[in-house]
Length: 245
Image 1 (spheres, helix red, strand yellow):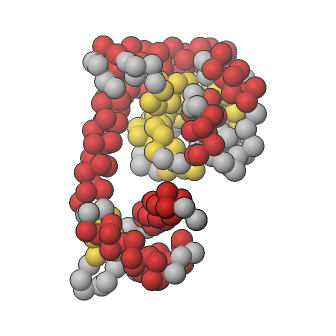
Image 2 (cartoon, rainbow, N blue to C red):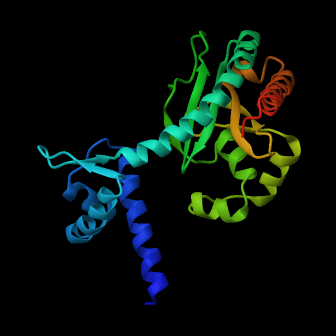
């Protein structure tokens, strides 16, 4: 094994360790070793290096690890950017919500996850419930396919290697300007998702309108698609006017 390959492997292992904290706030050395399938000795060696650079911290009393200050600084920078998107989107999302009283959500891509940044929840009896801050694995939902459609093939391979992706359907999504799907995890839920771009033309968020099929399809589905796409374009224009990257 060459030196470059060894270095790459070490970096990948360090990323594997950091990703353990996506679902847990604190972990012991043995828990990290189990999650990553690495030996405790290997985890200790890598995590000591991460700790020296401030990416991981260790509680002296409990001996458990958590994300450190350096990593939190990166999170703050990402959150600051997302806050600008959220501020631009909120009044436009409210208009879409008032028009249909269906779930209206704002998603950004957070690594391999779809992160819900803002939402207006339907007050009708039948609805799908998620919360601000919820993360879902990048999948083949309307919003997931929308993000996948606007990625490079290389990025798709890195973030979603296990998904069976139809390149032709992604081309169609880019051409149509929106994605439409039934959420396989919530029987009968239909979602419309439209892209939001920054001033550089990069997709930075997705606007979603969703609800049960019996309401969305039977009540001016074409209008709902048109209005969702128009709302996403309005947010895009606001981001460009405010010079938000």
